[in-house]
Image 1 (cartoon, rainbow, N blue to C red):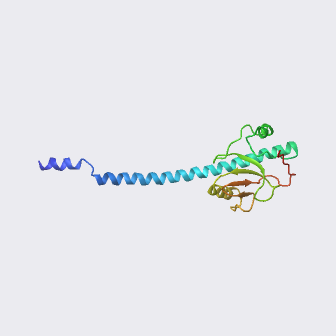
Image 2: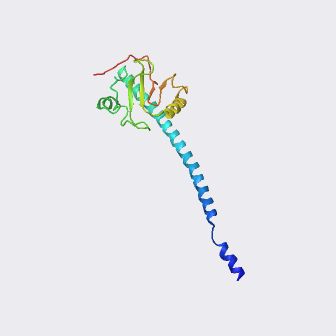
Image 3: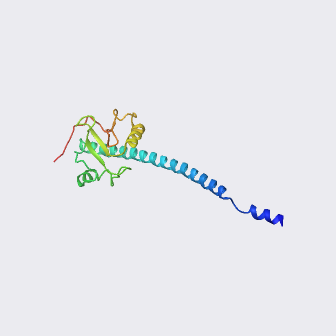
Length: 166
């Protein structure tokens, strides 16, 4: 009788053992989720860098064909912009943080500074993109701005300024 009693006690888990296992699983999942979110943010920054390089390529193709950059109309998704860019790029992507890319005159340097702008990427994303593509300082180099607006001037700044504001 004493032997059966020992066997029946050894079959189950105690409440403390279950709580310890659940807390370990919770701790491990929080570590994994943190790593996944970090990797996701790095991927977004890398995608934005590729997008900006592709947009500069499109602008340089347009420059080669027309001896000038396209005029500014402030929205990559406008019919005008899709019209001039159609031979060079079929579909515009949006930044990984939403909004749109803009072909703009500069705000942070001078009004004749030609740049591709991203609205509201967030300060951490702006700093990460600048570190990846430029000098790591949002006040100098070809990437300037803040989390509210970021400008990438990776195009030839010596090409004459064309502004088509109407």
